[in-house]
Length: 636
Image 1 (tube, one colour):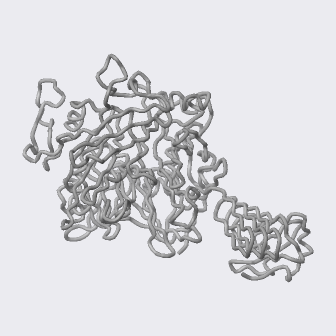
Image 2: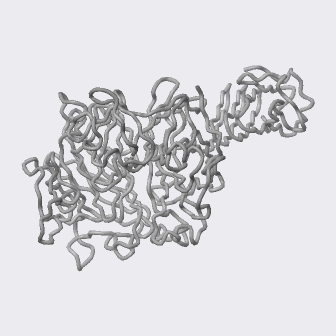
Image 3: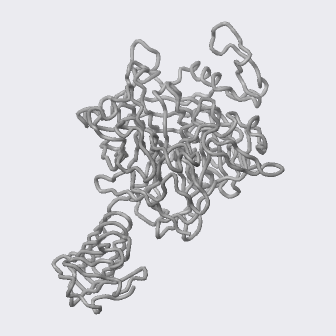
């Protein structure tokens, strides 16, 4: 079964990008109805014809409809909350051919199959899966990195757990060895070692540290052990020498800020795993009273969130305004980008609009326990990129989810977090957007923006004038999976927080949203010879050049120029209206694809139309199409 959404795009492409939605919350795909609050995305090639896309649902514990997983002795009901859905997408048509729950069995923090979610899951169900990361085995070279393909997603709540999906078995494992956090995302770094893995951690809490987990791989162990996710060390980033005379080291954005500035530091280990102190109590907040609920280490010996924070502060960790997404540089596995979304009420407002950092890690002395790292500010929202924009509201605001593409650019989404909320869009009038950032220059280009007019039939937007209420969340460059050039095809989703009604209400889907492609318009040049040029879903430009060429624009409003030689211009239904600039009636032909025949066509002025729907398939510049005959067409 092939499925494509019937709803309009909730986002409009800009500056050479177009949007093509594939699923809208409220729709059912072959019996499966994905709930709302779509977020993090991962993808891999399932077979020659199919890409499997895994998407988080950032549902709080208990929200949304209940679902079933496999327990020890049969089916177990999970009472709502976060989950992962898969969407299998045809690589040629970009239509969904299957969808469902992405996991079958859940393993708790003790490694046991979840039979009783009320007692085995910290929040009674899974809680707020935010951004996500699909990682292939040995992505940094022979034996370096994970041993299995894994999708990672974490609970974005203080005291949350990171979770690892074995994509081969459908098992979802808790990963307590990474510590506690309000998990935005993790990204794998290249240690250069075959026996260790490393993950940079975005902890989405105000004033949180930047965490680094380094795990030890056990080739003879279980899923977690062989991937280095069962035993390791946890570190926090601490700045080095002072730049401020009144303070020993820089500890927050009031002391380190400004586009282009850099700060050296190191990752300092914290003593977060003490099995000898499991279930121990401690006066963590220092008020002189040890409360019955003031646990320092949990039942497995890991520091609780409060204790872990205290350990970080004891070594003077740098406190970020609110760490968000992280993504590794595909050209250098020791570098990553970090978004901190900003908090006006912290640090004297030094990071009201959010900051995007480059994290450059050196693992050369890892064996000696030394890990250094430098931070560089790629874009500081408070100074609008060192004056790149006239006002912070004109540039990148509240950076959240992001992806570092193989084309060298970083793609960043906005999630309104200004205080007051009316600051967001108050000057610019711009809705939440997607930006392209050049990390070498700091230059920004807006490539997409929320369109609040795209309310699906039967649904209601309760706050249509509230700028930033809808956000895009979760973005992933999937170009290579669809045989496209890097940076030309992305998947992203929309969280339409104020959309309710219809199936959203009746089926307990929580809120509206959408999963969509974002495609760059491409220019393809054939040059000399017999070329076959095929566009994709953007508004592409195809130029055949010399020779006998075949030009197929694909989806979108494409511009086709054959050049010299006898050329074939391919048309199909539901692919948009192409413009053919140089059709020669005695030289070129039009190829009809997808079952089209000459008898299906109608002609009016410069246009070729599909008789059954009146769809304009093509406009032929300078040609009266009523003069065309069947001799001008071929079936391809």
